[in-house]
Image (cartoon, rainbow, N blue to C red; front, side, top):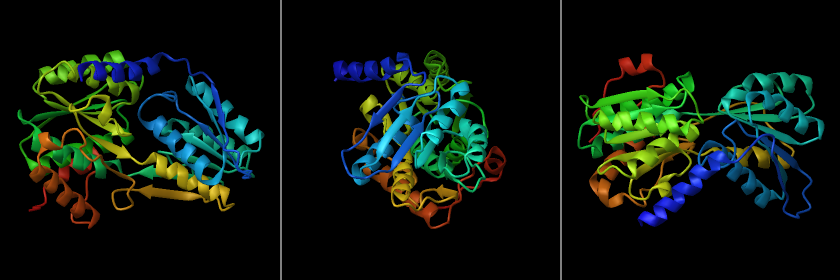
Length: 344
């Protein structure tokens, strides 16, 4: 098991070193479909085992389901966003995806320059008539992750490691902290931000600090930087990680309690299929627990560790959120006002 874990982590960290500047990946299924769909990744690129990879899975699913011709441009830096988006606009793609909130301004400019082209952005809102914006209620899934962490923690101290301290990541932080307090109002939640989504070394260093301060579980929401806690946890007894965006449970089987999955793949596939059916939408699509836009994984490697009773309790909390009995906070201000709701 140790050797297998080492191989999995080696593959994950090797992906960090692969150059991604403006790499173009192209694929088509041989179907008669003529729809062309482009995707521009953020600077994390493919191989992040997280957000970008989830979006790419959705693109490949659309290729399989409707025979779309798909291409991906990977961005080495923010300076690549607008040129990459422009490539797809000028090459007559039916739908172009901007993956990540960092592209909102660039997409806004490109969408205005190409009003007859259609675009979609994940994790941000661009208010243009030819753009469909998709965001998620990360606080919903993070609330469940926090509740689970508080139920499993032996030290009554857990932690959140974010990439960059911005409103989007504070949704994860607020939801996670509130979920933990739903279980134990006195639980200690440590919070740190790496300041980057790509700095694995700093992610590892901060994870070591958090574990040393008594946390036995870290919710790692930091892109590639978030792989740092995985590297630290594998060598520390009784230390665990909660993954994010994609199902990261297999990165460190038995040490990843669960992953807070954002179903970016489903969102991308849905928008892509609308484009293939010549019914592209505009406006703002918000996906939470109720819409199956976020959620936890199935505890494949940790079911025994967590215990059936705790899993059932987390599910009751999930049902309460879906029913509107619990409203997870999405900001620090809302978190300060949050009061636990009695759920049997």
